[in-house]
Image (tube, rainbow, N blue to C red):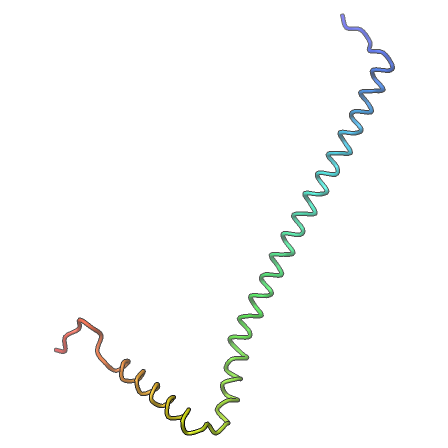
Length: 101
């Protein structure tokens, strides 16, 4: 047969259970807060990436269009035209290892 525990023992066990419940609530709320922080960091990263894509896709062409309106000094224009000619020559050459038939 089991005996009924004393009132003091029951009081101590109830106090220990309350402490455990408080600790568990703190851990749970802390883990939920961490999950929200991770989700918000992820969303910030997504928004930053979209901003970078918009900058490359929209702002860069506008900037290049703006630069076309300037008269470049002859020295720079000559160098740029030589580079363009070199690129065009390389693009028109047949790939290595391919024999003309």
